[in-house]
Length: 464
Image (cartoon, rainbow, N blue to C red):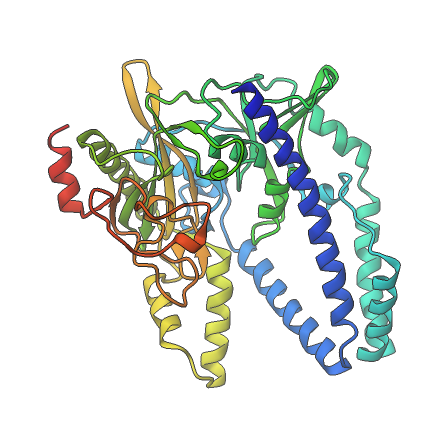
């Protein structure tokens, strides 16, 4: 287990570094290609980017903060922000894995942490030439002025102090706790958990240097740990439609009351293929304030047993309690991808452009002020036995992206709607032909003893 964990840790680290370089090259090449185009096309593209960015910023700023939830205020909040969901769980009386904020950084401060990438010279030259062709001297002067304001703001940030704060934040965090952002868990934890090699709370690995240790969301250099502010997953999720501050949270390791074994689909077909062990977790799907389905989070494990059906129904019941508590306060869960699509939909309506009926139906399913999300639960080990415990919340599973369908993968997959699956009822295990790591296998098939109706699940659970 230790060897597999070390290997996965190294592969995850190397993959993150490779992905960073790849994305940087792609961004540079796309920028260069854009600014070689005709002046009118450059202007139209940049105007479109500016319009979307302005909408996203205004939309995110309209979302309420956790202190507003505590104060009893109503309004929209970020469906991906764990801090809000923990407060909702508390209001609903639902057990939850606690979290405490250890550091908060602005977007500018995060950019100051050894993440600046200098564009290649040919890209800089191409952009400059494209700007001269597309914009007047007065317009370019205004753009330069805005750039100078950003540079002046960044110059006031001391990277040394930011770096030290990453160490200070970890000084009183227990060694077996994890660190994540308010938006997502770190890539290290995701890699270990997905491969089924976390069963004892020992979540760190060492690349061979005794002075260096890497854990979920943190890194130890010598005798001090620091937040891993360059974790690829934390940085990428922050850049995808949220407020302009990232909050780092520390959470205790929660031991699962039940685990399930199975062959790891992520290692399928490799020299490291084999079985893993996963905690019994459940993902509940909510649309417009109503639970539509619940699925085994690690859908390649589990069976259609009375106990599994009973636990799935329990998770669904707790999720509905949370949603009811949120609705009673007048809260709405927003997902930026949906709101950006809604913006384009409204623009098309106003311009009189033809609108595909699918989009009309999507926004009827996901009204702007509704509660649409996924809520995850773990069967935690309590003092008096298993306790179904809230773990985290996220975006809904929709035709426009969002939450993963888990054990519903491939179920009545909608042609032309990406990876949208029908997430209704109780999915206890993936269909036999579906390999979760291979989307090409995601298609509808035999759901017997895999995906149950609510009524069939209740009948099965009655024998638990």
